[in-house]
Structures are given as structure tokens and as C-alpha cells.
Image (cartoon, rainbow, N blue to C red; front, side, top):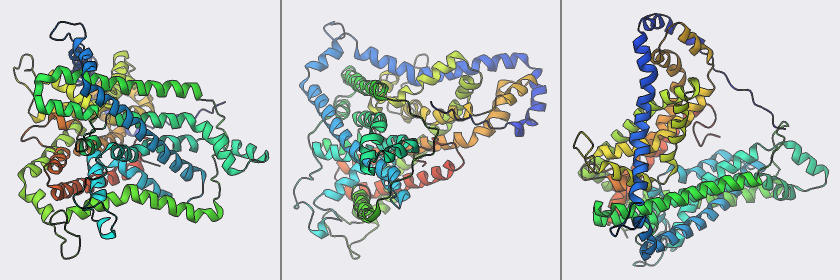
Length: 593
């Protein structure tokens, strides 16, 4: 029998005085209350329809349209006759499956060691595990390239780097598998850790009374109970790999290992909007694979899930005894290799005057940083554009999340609850799919305006607004459900309109949650590449795009310097989010312990 946790109720009494005068004034404006009651919901519905539902609907319409011969669904079916599309699909499934196995191994082992044993330095270990997830994929891929290449500032002095002039070994299928597996291991770790942490101590005590040793208890009892969470984390890692663009772009394009995300990018870059129907069909294939992965996760979890009595004390970690120091040393060294050394290599490359020059005190230079900050106009624009787009997306999304959560949770409007479900779709699908959907809708001139958003910064902002709304909406809905509805009812009885209640009663209490969600959006949008790579135009470069193109153009040291600056910004924002997490409910900040 599961125990029911009491719902936390946040007192609203501190806002009671604020609505008195406002409520009296609002009671004299019934027309305004009628307007805001109905039209606020309409505005939110129009927002989601314009930025999410309409583009995704048009994407499927474009992909399933008849081909030039008039064959029903011909545009979509033609892709199954394309050898390049079939090869990219095969590569996508192969690399995603193999990288998921890597993620499951790293994430599950880490969760077992951190939850079920008395290992020390757990905070440092969690930080290293989450680093690849916090850092944008194109920066992590570039860091791995600099670590394993012939000019590696880490391996070359040790004589372990490949021979000069040889191809980087990561430019291959296995390079993609390793880097994506490391990047998405945190998704498995977080889900398995949550499941193991919630298991009751009674299970372990019963097994010990039966004479079972710790290793047998873990392998035969605890891990089978956590198996649905392993599958859940594996499905998340698989879906993330399906939609990953940064790693396949930096490693797969040079290695001639094309995946669906990179095939879409190459076709759109090579032929432009004239192949929009073809890339839309490829995007639909990506969507169907991702949906199948999530559906499989749900079905398997339901099949293998089991009800567990959770009323007893939580698990007490097993002592490692004499094995603790060797286990800690080996695991910390492994995490340092996969998470820390690539970043050191990235920083080391950024300090070189040119590739191939050994890193030393005599050769160390800050010229690459001077170049990207003050000598390269496109990089300067990228900083400004990324900051403006990320900040705008964060603020607008928070402003939309507040009324949508209120209408869904407090007002319990059926339409609002339906919109709340639809808001997750743009974040759940691969970013490449969303970018194609945005192009399909906003490439033609807007109805009534005659202006196209294509080749402008506005189309990037539209994509960010669609994709990242869920990051602030989900914690806002959770926080809204914990509020005591009594004060809202009292304010309503006093005559306060909806806008007044939102402003004077609800918004002050949810401000920390909205700020934390907005910060998460800013973190992801500031270094975003997957969506921006298909939507940017001259004058509207973003940081993620500039790191990618500097590397492709061969200016690797400048790319490393720009990536290092973006890395510092990402870690700084993560630190700010961690400070917010101390004042917020569990789950608002994903990496909170």
C-alpha cells in the first residue's frame, strides 16, 4: 500500500491586504472582468496555436502531401526510395541504440554506487556526471575532438595522441556513440537514482534476515525493482540521441556517417526551401521514431512496474569496507576522463597560437579570446543575438506560463488543461523537426502582413518560444498546485478581477519558480544549436552556430576560445540556478539533489 504524501499548501495570507482596494475598483468594472476572464484564455490559446500547433500541423501536411506525380502521401513515401534517407535512418537507429547502451551502463552504475554504497565525495561525482548534460552538445563534441586529435594539448605531450596528419578517431560511428552516450548518461542516472532512493529499508532487512549478502540484494532484489526506471531513463536517452544534432554534425559530417538530423541540415543548406517537402518528410520520420521510443517506454514500464510499500525508512547505503578507496579511485578517474579532461583539452586548445604548437608557458596566448571578443564582428553579434533571444524567450515564456498554469490549475478550464498538454509537444520532439515546422509556416509571407520571418531573427525567437515554454510551465504548474486556493476565492469574492488576482495574489508567490524556469530557458537558449542551425541568417548568428562554423572553417583555436566562453557562461548560469534550487520545491531545477 502506498502512503499518500500530504499536499503542501502555501499560505496566501500575506497578499490579503493587497487585493482590498484593487478588488473594490475591479468590482466596478464587470465588463473588464468579463473581457479578461475570456480573452486571457483566448490569447494563450492563440499563442500556442501560432507557435506550436499550427507549425506542427503544417509540417505533417507538407510531409504527407501528394508528390509531383499526384501520388497520395507521395512526398513521404518517396523518402523510402531514397538511398541516402534509408542510410541516414539506419545510422540514426544504430548510433542511438548503441549510445543508449553506453548511457545505461554509466548512468545505472553511477546511481547504484551513489545511492546504495557509502562512497564519499558524492557531490563532486554528481557534478561530473551532470557536466556533459549541462554543456551544449556541440561544445562537448568539440572538447572531445580536441582531447583525442593529433594536436591534443593533453595527450600529445604524453605521446598518446594519434600520429600527426591522421584523422581524428572520433570522426566515426563509434565516436558519435561514445560522445552521445556520455552526454545522455545523466538522464539515466537521474531516473535510476530517484527510483533507488525511494525504495524502503524493509526490503533490505527482510533479505538480510534470509541470509542474502549485499551484492545479491542489489542484483537480485533492488535492481529488478528499479528496472522500470532503467527503461525509462534508457528511453529518454534514446529519444535525446535521435534528435541530437551537435554531436553528429561535428563528428558525423567529417566522418561521412550521416544521420537524419545532419541529412536534413545538409539538404536544406544545399538546396534551400525548394526541398522543404523532402526535409519535412524526414522530420516526420524523426518524430515517429521519437514517439515510438516514448511509447515503448510507457508500455514496458507499465508491464514491469510493481507497487511497493514505501512507508518504512529509506535505504541505508551498504558499506564498501576495504574496497571503498579503490572503487572511489577508479570511478572518479573514469568520470574525470569522460567529463573533465575533454574540457581541459578545449581550454588548452583555446590558448594555443595555432594547432600543432605544443602548449607551454612560452606558447600560451590569449589572442584567440581577443579575436572572438573584439576582432570578429560575427562573434560579437552572436553574443548580442544569443543574449537578446534567450532573454526574450525566457521573459515571454514566463509571462505565458503564469496565466496558463492559473487557468489550468486554479480555474480548471478544460481548454486550458488541454493547452497545458499541447505545450509539451515542441519540447518533446527533436529540435530539427520543430525548426522545419517553423520554416514551413513562416517562410511564406504572413497572412494580412505580407512579410516573411525567414532570414530574420524573429523566426529564431518564434522557435525558442515554442520549444522552451515547457521548461517554465511544468514547474509553474507544480507550484500552482501547491497553493491554497482559499485566498484566490477570497479575492474573487472581494470583487478582484483575474488580472488583479494574478498580479497581487499569485504572481508574488510564484515569482521564484518563474525566475528559476526562466533561467533554465535562458541557459538552453543561450548556447542552442539544433534549432538555430536551420534558422539563422547573416546578421543573426548565435553562439552555438558560430562555434560550429568556426570549427568547420578550420579556425579551431578560435572555435575553442568561443566555446570556452560559452562554457563559462553555462556553468555560471547553472550555479545561479543551484542557488535558486534551495528555495524551490524538488524537481524545479533538474540537477537538484
